[in-house]
Amino acid sequence: HVQLVESGGGLVQPGGSLRLSCTASGSPYSMYCMGWFRQAPGKEREGVAARDSDGSTNYADSVKGRFTISKDNAKNTLYLEMNSLKPEDTATYYCAAGRGLYVCAWYAQADFSYWGQGTQVTVS
Image (tube, rainbow, N blue to C red):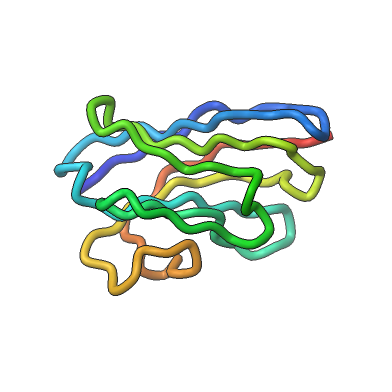
C-alpha cells in the first residue's frame, strides 16, 4: 500500500512556473508507475504525465514541452515541473501510483490504484 501527499500548488501569473511535489510512503516506491493528473472545475479529471519505474516518461499533448515529470527515489518524491503556465492549466493536481499496469501512461488513469488528496494550482 502507498500513501501519497502532494504539495507545491499556489497562485501564479500566466507564463510563470511552479514545481509540485508528491511524497510517498508505504510499499517500495521505486517499483511503481507514477503519474500526475488534474481536474478543473466542472471538468473530468485528465491525465498530465506519467513516469515508469524504468525512467521512461510520457505527456499529454496539452503540456508537452512545458511540463516535466521526475522522481527522486532516495527522497520517495515525485515532481512535476510546470513552466510557461497558462490559465487553462488551472486545476487541482493529483499524483497517483500503480503497479503492474499494462501500460504506464498519462491516459491510463483507471489503472492507477493509489491517489493523493490533490493540490490547487491557479494561473491568473
